[in-house]
Amino acid sequence: MISDADPLRPYRVRRERLLAHMAAQGGGVAVVPTAPERERNRGTDYPYRPDSQFYYLSGFREPEAVLVLVAGATPRQLLFCRSKNGEQEIWTGFLHGPEAAAERFGFDEAWPIEELDRTLPGLLAGQPALWTGLAANPDWDRRILAALASARANVRTGIGAPRTVHEISAELDEMRLIKDEIEIALMRRAGKISAAAHCQAMRTTRPGRFEYEIEAELLRVFRAGGSQFPAYPSIVASGPNACVLHYVDNERRMADGEMLLIDAGCELDGYASDISRSFPVNGRFSDPQRDLYQLVLAANHAARAAIRPGNDWNAPHEAAVAVLTQGFVDLGLLAGKTEDLIETGAYRRFYMHRTGHWLGMDVHDAGQYKVDGRWRPFAPGMVLTVEPGCYIRAADDVPKAFRNIGIRIEDNALVTADGCEYLTEGVPREIDDIEALMRE
Ligand code: GLY
Ligand code: MN
Ligand code: MN
Image (cartoon, rainbow, N blue to C red; front, side, top):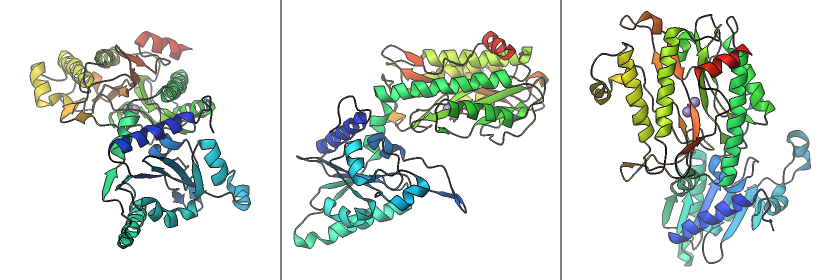
C-alpha cells in the first residue's frame, strides 16, 4: 500500500473522488486511455506525452496504458499497461510491467495491455453505465464501442450491459478546474522556470540577432530548469511579426528600433505555464512604444484587479477592454465614444482575442467558461491567464509611429480567497525594470 508521504497518493485520491462522483450518479465503469504514440516521419516519433486526463488520474507516463475504475459497493481500480520486456527495454528503456505498476501507482490490480480487449466486455457486464471520452480519438471510439457491443451481445445470457454512456470529461474537467496543492506547487515551479527564461531572453536580445537565437535561450532555460517540453511552440516575433498572433517561424533578424513579442512557457511534469512579454530590441522604449506598452500594462493591472471570488469569468476581459478602448481613443487610433466602440466591437481591430483562458495540464485547460448560460464565478484554486494586448498593423489611417507594434503582457493567475496571486512574478513587467534587466 502507498503511504501518506507517497508522491503518487494524490493520484489515487483523485481516482477515489471520481469514483464517488460516479457512484452518486448511479455507478458504472470508467475507462480512460492514455495518448497514442504518433509518428513524426519515417523512423521518428513525436516526443511522447501522456493524455492529460489519464495522467491526472494515474501519474503513469508510459504509452499504451488504460485505466479502469469500477464504481459500486466494492470499487476497483485497474491499470492495463505494457508487460516487462527485456528485449524492448534494451532499446527504449525501463517498463514497470503490471505487477510493479500496480504497487507503485496504487492500483488494486494491473494487467498486460494485450488483455484489455478480451477483458473489457467482462468488466462492463452487469454495469449500469460506461464512463469514457468519445469523439476525441476515432481509434479509441472504435475500440471502446466494440467492447460495449460485445458486452451487449451477451445480454441473452441474462447479464446486463451498460445502457448509458457518460462523457467522462464532464466530471474530470470540473475536477481539473480547481487545482489541488500538488498541482499549484507544480504550476508555481513552471511559472518560475518560464519567468527565468523570459529574463534570459531580455538579457540576450539585441539588434542584429535572429529570433531563433532568442528561442534557443528560452528552450535552454526551460530544459535546464527540469521542464520536459515547451508547453506550446514559442512565439518570438519581432517588428511586424508581433502582429501575427500565432507566428512561430522565429527566423527573422531583429532590427534596432523594433519591439519584440515573446509568448513562451514550459511544461513541467504535465503542467503548463504561459507567459508573454514585449520589449524593445535595443533595450530602450521609444515614446510611441512606451505609450502603447503602458496602455497594455494598465489593462493587465485592471484585469488582475478583477480576478477574485464574487466576480465572474468575464470581469477581467471587460476591465481590459474598457482600458484598451479608452487608450486607443486617447492615442488617436480609434475615433468615437468609448462605450460605442466597445458596444460595436470596433476595438477588435487592435485587440482581437480574449483576455485569458484556464491554464493547467493543457495550455487552454479543461473547464467550462459558462454554466447554465452565465459566465462562471471565480473560486479559489482556479488558474487562468491574464493576457491583454494590442496589435497595430500598418495601414494608411494608423499614425506612423504606432505601425507594426504588437504588444502582449501575459501572466498566470491563481485565484485565492480574496483576489489572485500571479505565478509569473519572476519576470519584470514595468518599463524601468525591463530596461534595467536589458542593460545587464
Ligand atoms: N500561448 C498560448 C496562449 O497564449 O493562449
Ligand atoms: Mn495564453
Ligand atoms: Mn501565451
